[in-house]
Length: 194
Image (tube, rainbow, N blue to C red; front, side, top):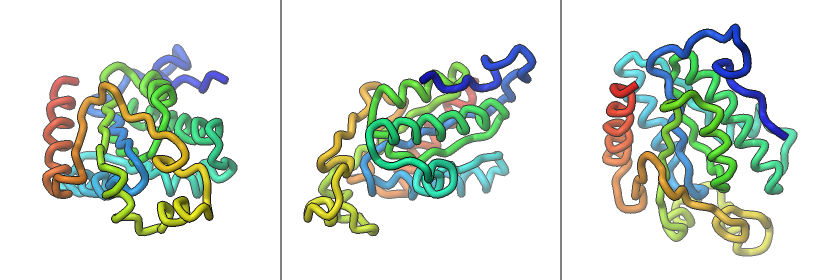
């Protein structure tokens, strides 16, 4: 099934893309630090009065995609829906922060294709699984290791790391503040080029 196209391509009546909008797609294993870094970026954007929106994968699952499970097909649909909403907001000049596991490369490529050129900025939060397990506040890794749950990304379901992200952050060895600054610096460079 082909997802609907964002306004730039879905209709000849769509408004031109507003300046400054971009989707910052933070991908990585569960508990890699995606949401923490998104909130750090949000603080920087708010302090500069830059319009932004966080589309957190967990919150979107609760409200936008609560009809989906965790099969590969459902995970792909979840990512596509979030990506579509992100593309609409980015087209309107909003900085969209998307901390979403999004485990499959092909689906992330589909999300990139939904965006106007230059409006998708993939950030791979490259945290080793051992560090993610230590950070696991929800206890998902322990539940997966004990067999209580199956299909856990990074344990018994694959995570396909990006091959050519706009930025890779070693969040396991870099502090939150340093990681946020790395993303901010790269994002500023991207925005000045748009």
